[in-house]
Length: 239
Image (cartoon, rainbow, N blue to C red; front, side):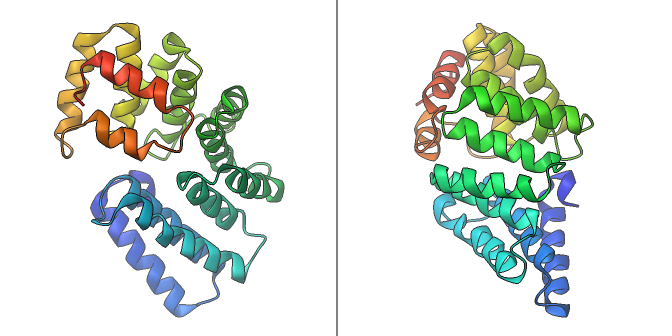
């Protein structure tokens, strides 16, 4: 259900995970995956709370998981992702590296590590991690997440032509505002304004119209913010 990246199925997955925790309160993986579900509900703006405040909820479930099993890589990954989203980059990278030390074959952990690296400004390292994750798991089962993050890392590194096919593929896999934003930014940098306008129209059907001011606030702690917003402005996204 979570892999389909659908609001109703995310809510149902949360309900099932809470039932699992009620049956076995010390089940670390259930706590960790509940944190993962809540993170994406927050990221997709499916929850009414302020995004930065809402991130504390999945972080709390990840910490609960770590209390029950500090060796669970999912718990380390979710906690690290939440720390990254709060701008605590060094702590986040430490947690995500710990997740990969526990399970070096954790492809999802590698793509999240790459995401945190690009947010922290380590663009070359991010490309290594996201490229490695794509090779480990070439058939992405989570709504285009792998191609989205790899494409975003390429945008951050100003490799726009290389990024474009990955970001087009991510939107083909699932329609989510974040995926559209990355693709619109890339198109803006490449001067593909007509294509970008089509994506802006499609993205605005998913929620309140995209605005630079909102994204500037949401990306305040991330190193790729300026290049990202520059592409959006070139594409015609209003302030």
